[in-house]
Length: 219
Image 1 (cartoon, one colour):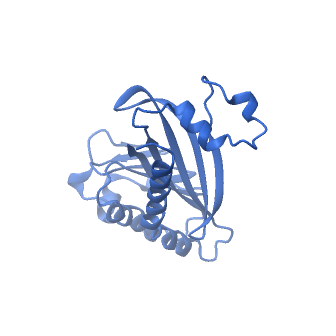
Image 2 (cartoon, rainbow, N blue to C red):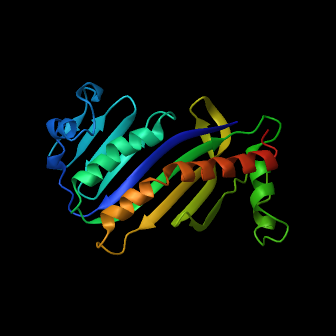
Image 3 (cartoon, rainbow, N blue to C red):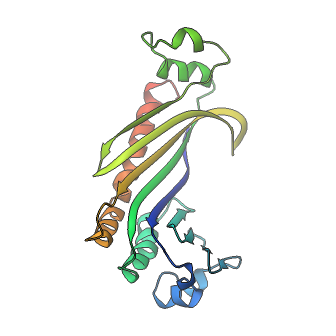
């Protein structure tokens, strides 16, 4: 069974001013409707945390971070919130943008994670196999490559205590798609162009999880 447990976008900036992001400004600019903003949202000169049924927006001087709370309408929510904010503040020095997708992959119960992960990551040619090929060993891996004009980084590691099956071991696949912005000449344009790649990046993560699931005896 595969389940996405966390997905967010982080826009790294320089000298972002959280004081701008008051409820009145957010509503006036069309970032959120007034009835979307939940009680418990926080506003201060150093950080802002706006909570809605669909998302959680964190603003601190170093970054904007939008966490999606539902798997539905993600592209719509992202464009309504982040695109609106970025377009409203075009002179902000943006430094990078990243997508994060965290998946949990559980076995069917027929095989243990220790066995599955060793089959996946400890080949016969691996010099560490003789040391870590034991029942109590847990094995993970880090991989990276260019994808969608971004750098895809994938960390796979065994975890324990999944929300719906507390105590059951599983594999956690943490995907990060990262785009550095080296020049401010078209920084805003680069951020907006990269936001449009969200669904494509999510699909890539889904396909990789499916590939692992189907070829590592998870089903």
